Image (cartoon, rainbow, N blue to C red; front, side):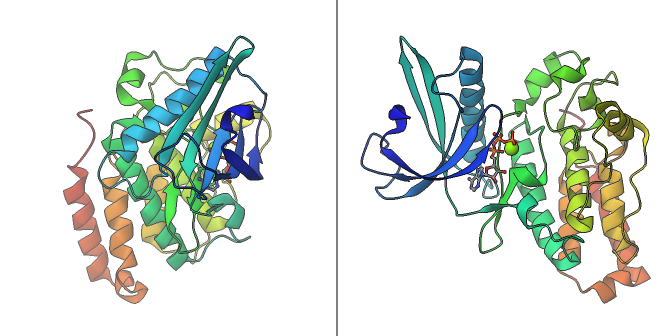
Length: 314
Ligand SMILES: Nc1ncnc2c1ncn2[C@@H]1O[C@H](COP(=O)(O)OP(=O)(O)OP(=O)(O)O)[C@@H](O)[C@H]1O
Ligand SMILES: [Mg+2]
């Protein structure tokens, strides 16, 4: 597209109904924040021009990304560099420029039977830390899933795709979603309250449910609810128990996933801090000592302590 002529496309990474994601190289041009010859990711629409509504959607994603980037501790969130816009009589075009870390999506590297526990812990701690920094900005991601998580060659993880995200205040002012047509997010991962079938507004805890489904997939290599029928899937999110995870997995991890995916958001964690602390704690201790009753007692005590650090007041 002519309006990003100073970016030379290298490859197309992803195309969906409304957007395409490209890797491109920056040639001399208008963006002062980017050095000549640097590779970047460009997210734009698939057609030459786009509607006002879609343009606003891209603008929103960029603005939300910038809010998170400007906060401390956002190293597990992708960096938004600039927004390219062009308006002519023929129409308008828009593209988001994102930093390129030569990452792959987590979805593309999940082994058939899931990640081993040590790798899972490395990934899940960083994902949870990323989500914590998003929530600290009072933003709900609303589309947590392995294809919206990327990883570089040094196993550094980042959250991407704030296309569905919103500020908590907007959600508080909204009436609960009533129609399945208006679901934001991806049906295989959405919380019961995002399905439009229960009378509840969306908040941080909706992300915890999607995080739990994501963890389940990372550990088992498959989604807990596997059906292509929309209504069946909605029913599963609202009423079905998750199929048991492999029995060799540490109980503490299974418990974290069960708590994240509770049907009633009041029964989930009330803040990312608790799973973050529990996962980090387990990562730094050998599994043998974790299995000892004494250590499990310590973990239980800590989880009670940190339950008080909740987002209930938001
Ligand atoms: N910064 C990045 N680095 C590497 N790959 C990326 C990056 N951003 C996006 N991708 C790749 O492009 C894919 C789609 O990106 P993104 O989720 O932002 O687009 P999308 O149009 O919202 O997609 P969908 O609607 O399918 O979620 C990702 O799953 C990932 O494989
Ligand atoms: Mg996406």
